[in-house]
Image 1: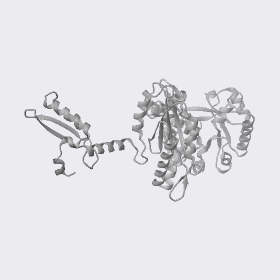
Image 2: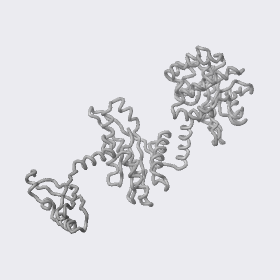
Image 3: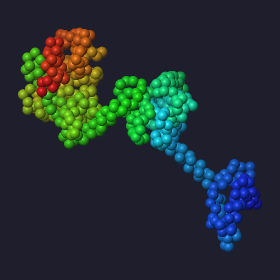
Image 4: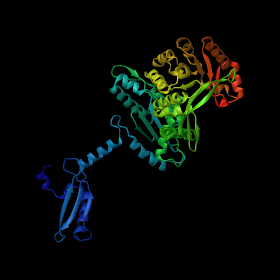
Length: 493
């Protein structure tokens, strides 16, 4: 409708009859002085065009018998506002709600959901997604993400569920359960079934899009929205550690995982303030009881929580990415303090340092600064790291007169080949085998026979066998009778 045509029409002719009647009545009340002004959003129909809902304002002028009418059509602004709101709450690539939208919905459901059926949150992290993007490119990754979104929609079709993309390769599904909602196990099976189908890319290549899933089923009362998300994340990480495809939240395990996360976060500060220190554990010859040397280990005297041992300090440091500086400090401190001792000094280094191309230069540099002779230093490297650079480091260290010990030596696929291929002087039995021997029922005949053969083969190769973690005289006697050479642990401290 042109401006000229519009000017010939009255306000009431532009409105649906029911609306026009209501506005006429309101205008009469306005001229009679019963109301001061009219301010409503009314539907106005333009001939041959789509209906709009402008803001209608009517106010009296002069003696109150004349009225001024203003129609403010902000439909385009409202449309833009709605589009921006949608974009702020949805993922651009998949069209799914984002974390913010899901958080709002979860917060509402925690207060409104049926107490009998509750809600369930599934948090999914795609497996090896970076392999797809690194190997096949960003577009391939985007296609996989869109396909996963479509397949999740298919799984939860008909359910009261919100499917969201909450991270780069992470999705979440919030289900408002009913009596007819499938159980968690059935739902997980359905998700795995859908995601197990290959995603075929334009070039004809098929890739998998499996996921690891953390499930929070019917969150305990009192948990906030943030608590539920944290619980789902902890549960997913636990599934990753265990190597399972999914895990259901467990209050006790969640609390333990949260405590470990808190410890990992506090470790850097504890190191800076001196709570984390270096101590030397005694090592003895099992056959004679004579001193064999000392082992430099980390010890965290955590206020209010007791002592955190070396192994756990290393695990926590690896989680926070601080093992490289902490391991370098341990090496330096062990050389400096060991120089003043009249015994051999042993230090076990983590995987990240075992594969450091500068490891040999680091070790030789610390020996030179501290004055500790190379013949009195023993360096332990984990068996699982002895490939490539780490294997080269073993040879270079040995060539410089430094004894190398393979830590966590046991029944691994390549452990026996190390006895032939590397210049080793000693191996240390894996801690899981030590723990198995310490059980009341013992290690069992198969493990005991394997250990006997392992020790015999090591000795035939001219390699000594060490055992850590011995806690009692009975344990010491058992390992001595097996033929192990060196022992360490609380029993000898």
